[in-house]
Length: 285
Length: 299
Image (cartoon, rainbow over all chains, first blue to last red; front, side, top):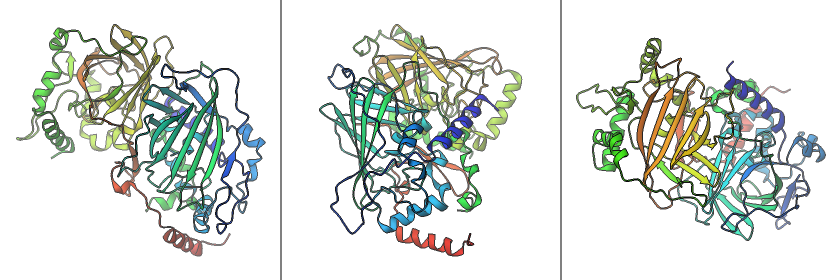
């Protein structure tokens, strides 16, 4: 076994261990009945209290300096505290406001079709799933200038180059990660993400979005080592109303660095799926 | 017509159309080190700390990605191009005898044996030479190269940070330093699972690449890569070509993902292709699900 394949095995094993039940975080609001519109927004969070110690670093252009290596705080510890161990038992209500039809799709995928989770095939996760990744073991690095905030993710070498000029989305472009356009609202970097290709799942439990997904992310530095992150997801053909996810991003120690993650190149996750989970069936599609 | 020849012809035509000159002449111009050396020294734009500013989208508009040693004329209409190899001067990669046999075997099986056929990351220097563009992302103290192809990226950390030795990566482990206005990147840990081009030119896990990026003018970078691999080559050898800036306003790197086809092979899907868009028909999906569940044995 080469060193490279070893790291892939380790990474895949670690991923299976940690991301199996990472999202969708905890439910703080009851699931609304689809017939009752105009409820207050749904917010799911496992974020610890943000770190507000110290002044935030800034670039010469005056904007907060997000550069460095970061991970989210959705670690195993946070999940345990939030009591998420049982939330995905069959029949347990989920915090996402599905329509009855789309919830059936979600349930089917969760119970019968995990093989088709795009991450099992090393596809880039989409937004906000990429930020929810267990980045405590696979962090991401931000490089920032006056034009772009670039996020380089260790996980499946995904990346986002986000312009800061508030430019508009292109037409006739459909991508796993969509198209990200950012602008500054004071010290908050607001990213509008659209142009999704309709293939992404939100987690390993079958939660999903389709081609009408629209995300607004907000990155706010609360201290030199802490970013408050939220993502408001709307998808009128999947969810009855928008929902918002909060988490905090923490700075990695200066000694940490990205360890390149080659997924597709050593991919063996799909082999772990059984025939009933679609592995054999998929060969004939 | 073999696949490479066909690709080459298409690419050559596109290149000629884009530049208004023939591919062969283009390559010849790109590979003249004397011209580079005699050019008036160019002072590149700079970041606040004085380092040259390479930010932008760049592209190698050469056919070296097909065959580093130059295209071989295999038919009456097939044009040849010059080798990208500038050292040794004969333009041939100095393979050890067994490695040369392996390269020739690779060439014969290239359509299926090329790692790129599986949508793997290209490795170095192959990623730089690809016809798809890449973006250099840079700020004071940070330098990264982001490739369109398979969303591969490399972070070029300063040489003062030691290499991550002992683990191989498809894109290797890169460390950089400045020699004047030239960025010199030292790359190791490249493994033995990438090729150098579509023609089966290859390396072992002992490959050590030293790249040199020098801005010749605001729109052109001179790119040089020296490859050393005692398990594969008799001596180090060097390629040189030019990289050109994409000057279209609003130009962006687009997403490149592969999908598994019905034949089990992977193929790139353009995000501009409507086939990449999956429109969900939930009624149909539910009907399919009901069908599966009706036929499924009860637990």
